[in-house]
Image (cartoon, rainbow, N blue to C red; front, side, top):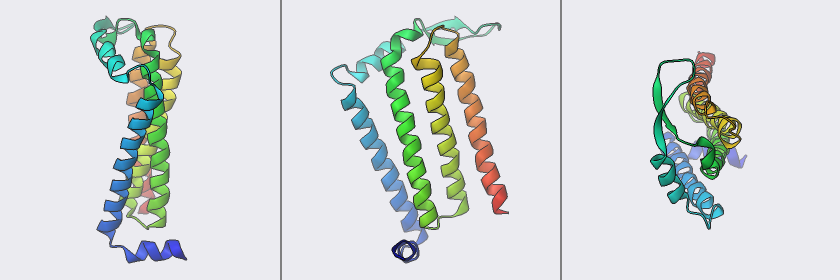
Length: 166
């Protein structure tokens, strides 16, 4: 009963503003927690080291040359922090979806949240699979191909939700 009342007392724009504030605040909290968890090493220094290590490397079996770290396996702690961030954002997106359902948000906003869930949780899977446990440098490019694929899957998930509405 309480959930039903909240959803109908607030105007739609106020509900969306509340969810946006919760989401942005949660992102800041996640960033702070990840930074603190990785102390005493400095994630900022790790990010700088990562970008300083970028070189042009050939993509296997193509004539294409793209940026890649000179030693991708040397940045495991940064990849782990990236994994923690993506999994946390994915969980936050699931919570936001639950709130959107309870607050009766528009279907387009629910579809957007489902797209985000697919992207963030899919990215976390790719990071832990291809970057944290990286054994060969070619996996760097496999990871990015996977990100493109996850982005496409996320867009399809959104489209299916919007189609189901009709």
